[in-house]
Image (cartoon, rainbow, N blue to C red; front, side, top):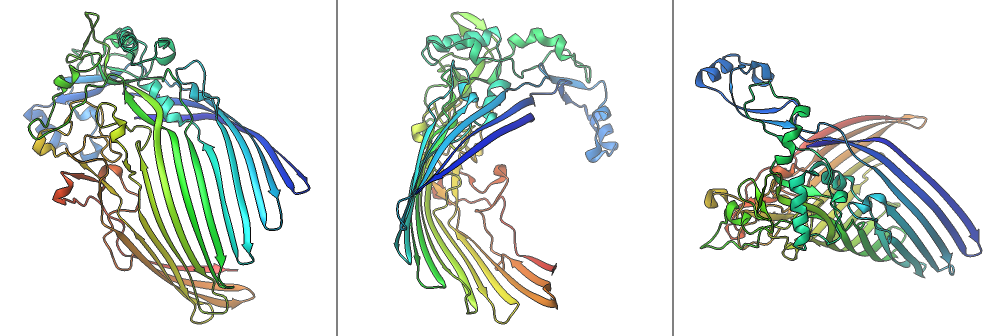
Length: 554
């Protein structure tokens, strides 16, 4: 866990506009700068794992402290099994600077056709990472058009490339979980020799003295030595996972965005329009393990590979809590050597159909929207990693936020002046389910033995149920109907007293997807194969709710 603070933040922006004839020209530049300071790692005062005797436990229970239990309530003579002390309780970070320039020309070709041409350039200094230079080729052309087919119909569309900044968390993670100590450097040099890091990798550029914890022996309760006195232990600390800055640098994520739309004014009250959208994203962030074990496929006869078996197949083999590098023991190494790479992709397709009716002189208005969409990717977020041996080709699948069908409708009825009744309906097909192995059956969820420090099943990081691909199952459809009654009581001279009553989820439907939830308790994580149909309900959208309101308008 870490805390990131932007100590200072500044931005500068300048715009210029010039019009001549049928052209409207715009140009500008922008600088966004932020100084980050990170506090992370463990506890410099020590985190204690203790063992209480039966009498000590009984005495502690008799205090009846509950949530007010204090560290001082633990007896001083308790047996300490382990103490973990942060060796670098300092803040660190880097200033992120983003430079942008752009030029745009809005060209009115005729009274029926308008064209817009644009060009933008961005540079983010964090793209350098552990390389000698950053990503300087972020040139983004853009084009759009609007053509009036008839007085009642218009066709519109556009294409553009849009760049995003480097998420600071990617850089901060590479600093926080890094170390320049000798054994880790030797491990990185071995990875260079094996061709898993570029031959020209500068170890100085990719390492950093980040957070690291040590566990000294012989420490009594609440008497941990200071971090300063333990610095000699740092070089020999074995870690399950450490990171480096990318020696190739990072490319800024970017998206090709294509849209085409048609709009038709049926009459003065009815409007129909259709929008087609395709987005193709590149350079998305994900994690690569440079010291990954050999691939492993779980079968019925051989469902689990132990951590020791997996460690023996790594490029730099691990033996318990050390490695042998050129025949010499190296303690201060990492089982997994992780680097953030900007190699992920995603694809999004959508068609949105819209029909709306204004109230006009009648008593009814409505808006109906149906969206058919598909979002797939081979990375979900900056901490996504392939299930097995960096095989991202097997990771293509529906995104956790993919919803194929969304139907939305809003209906309003105005029976008399100042009184209205409304119905809002939202129907969505279910979000994907990630099927994970049953630990009760296999004895572990780490079937391939790669010993990950975390396995977030929500975004697909955990091992998956044998034979199942990522997110290949679906939750049931969700449906929500809300109703409202509202009356505005005239008080004279433009003043009203507004009375309203709302019922949300009026049918009290149990909706298992399509709402914000705690990822660790998501229904999108299910144990066992899809064929079982097993669906454990971990949470649900809100049940039927009532709301009453009074508002004074003047």
